[in-house]
Length: 151
Image (cartoon, rainbow, N blue to C red; front, side, top):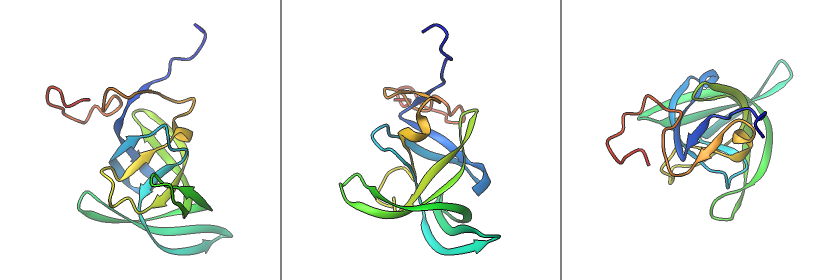
């Protein structure tokens, strides 16, 4: 296994960027139990441009409302943490965790009752990262933590 490429390690929470949406430093929970990544958003409208389907949505985060647009690739039934299946828009957009940037599928969901506005699922993590569930902010050097707070 010495030929294997060393993968960067993420903690159980990280700051992530969605640069094409103008969202930088979003607190995200790393969740290997979830297949699809999810972003707290309210869908405003569907639109078509140059034959492609887009969705316009609002992300309420960090005390501000950010209006975003992205190509929507699907509307899927996704099972939430409470076991209910919800129909959600799924977008595909670049996601950056640390120095690694890649295109990810992200469902748009009401996460207002959740501590983190974003959840990073295993489809985004697979073959890109190892997960250290005992630590936080492994790819987020911007976070200043007090002693004992990086767990």
